[in-house]
Amino acid sequence: YIIPNLLMQWISRNSNENVVGIAYRSTKLPANALGSRGINVVLPPKVRYEEMANNEFCPNLAKIFKFTLPVSWQVLKTVEYVPESVAQSDRENLSRRLRRRKNRELTGSIDDEILNIYNLTDFYKLETCMDEIQVYAHIKP
Image 1 (cartoon, rainbow, N blue to C red):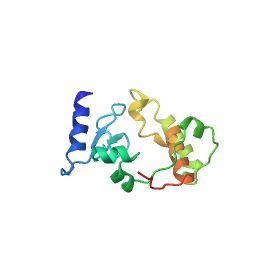
Image 2 (image 1 turned 90 degrees about the vertical axis):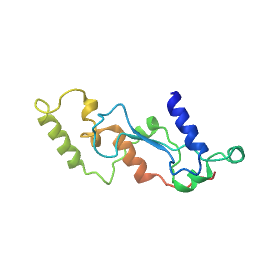
Image 3 (image 1 turned 120 degrees about the horizontal axis):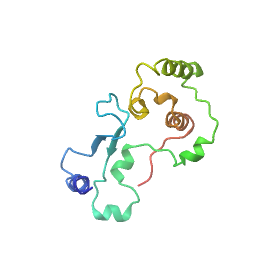
Image 4 (image 1 turned 45 degrees about the vertical axis):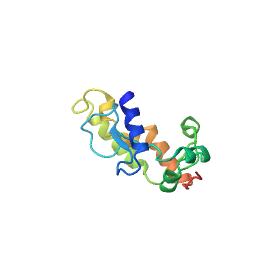
């Protein structure tokens, strides 16, 4: 944890540099996984002490991103929401394909195959629910 901390401090203190953050792959997914899923991004605030003392959030980052209100995923999971964006037949087809591959292709841990079946996971369902029913807005620094 020392090296990541030093990197974050360096990024925060060097406001003239083009480096604004660090992206790295999750250790829970295969290193050769394609696509943007499983990528963690850390964007430390680039602010002076006075700005930190006067604001709850980094003013620069607050202007860049839109957020939803925080919600507990355990609470959201209790909502029986049916997403618009994924038809039931898509899930059924993916489930059927997964069962057919059971003896042939699905080897090793299910964690290794999670990107192929992401649309069947609670994470996907909750992500879709939040995307479709929550309002995104800028936060006040």
